[in-house]
Image 1: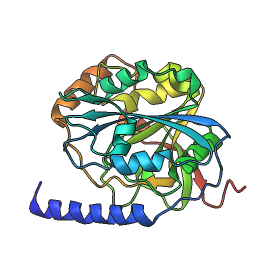
Image 2: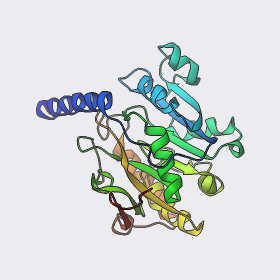
Image 3: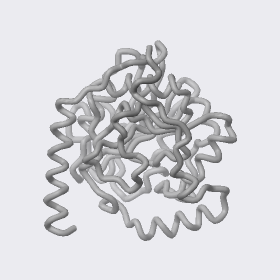
Image 4: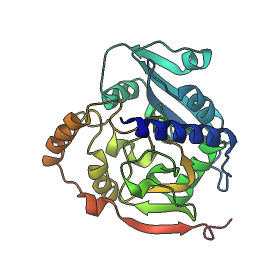
Length: 274
């Protein structure tokens, strides 16, 4: 990373930290009472992360029962909160979705309504859990992700927040830094396919699986998250993952990028009033 890029990243990271401290999202459509949400995540304990913030923010909900299960990778949990939600410590390098499958084997998914998968390098506004889950239920998205703030790192412009929209129904949801499944897709998308254990390529295969399951997917702009802590390729060898993805896609029905980066419906801020 060049010196100029590093300075820019630090500046955007400071913006994201201040944003998370001060921002809040309104819970316009509360989740159904008693909604059970399972949060699964992996955090790099030997690098800068936001997992303390995430554990606290995701656990604060007036409407959902939230259970969190995290794996600490290459280090021990550092605080009481991290220890409370860390179920395993793994010291060697293991691909993310292989670890998530291991977490899934230890839970009874039938007792949950949503599965939320989260990386360790994002920041959330106050009120996020109830607002995001509420919007996903209101819109009927079987698969959803929050949009990214304007200062966030991103590979795909389609996920950048549109402040004038509540949400968009799309044919694309990223594999990270956060996505959420409703129960209707548990048997369709789980367990994760370990042919591409870092998940590259899922987001081109998932849309067809979601459509065959007669549900929808989308990006929720009303609940953006900040993803400015790390950039692309800083936690994995992305050239190698591109090769794995190409092999994975060669044997499966999938969309191409043009087909995937499609917005099927927009929900403007003046629509969907209570």
